[in-house]
Image 1 (cartoon, rainbow, N blue to C red):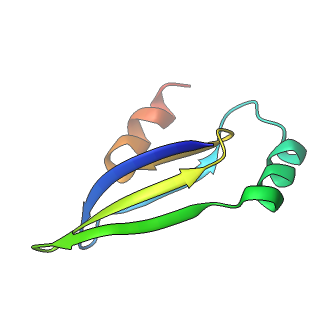
Image 2: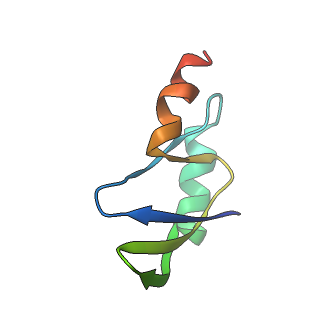
Amino acid sequence: MGRLVLNRRVGEQVRITLRRGVSVDALLDQLEDEGVWITVAEVEGGRARLIIDAPDELLVLRDELVERYEQSD
């Protein structure tokens, strides 16, 4: 299980998707056992600090990194 801690402002997004080459069946088993946890750790001045705990087979990206990841094909 991996962990990402990040700050988001109103309107900013986080994308959760499958990593390339990962077995969907293996991911489903892990999701069934552990799930994905999103915790709001702090809210201050229009910003929220999020903690995302997700299986390593999932890719969690800040919205500003999605295009860069997609271009890396």
